[in-house]
Image 1 (tube, rainbow, N blue to C red):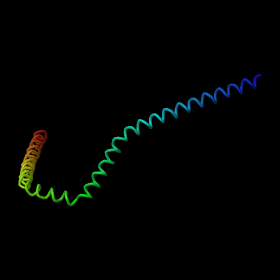
Image 2 (image 1 turned 180 degrees about the vertical axis):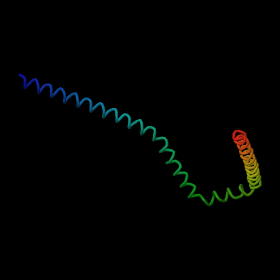
Image 3 (image 1 turned 60 degrees about the vertical axis):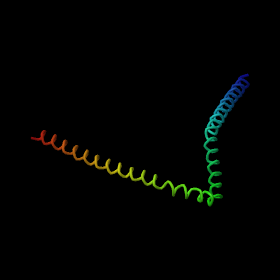
Image 4 (image 1 turned 60 degrees about the horizontal axis):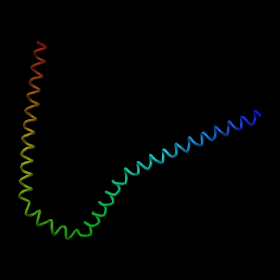
Length: 116
């Protein structure tokens, strides 16, 4: 009787383990499916960009013929924008240098006051 009881307990334990493993596998499959769902949209975007790139490569001559006159006509606007950006950059650099100089002077005055 004891041997049958041990075998039944062992069978029950194995069945419980089997059920736990099945649940774990199901949970991992569900998690994997969620991960794949999150990757599907970026993969579609990459595929579409590859198709667009192939189309541009195929029609590069036509695209060039259309863009060159547009860029030629817009060069003044682009140049003016670039000039404004360069001007703002130089002014920002000047103000940054003044800030650093002023900050250095204040710190040196403070240290001189504490030391003296």
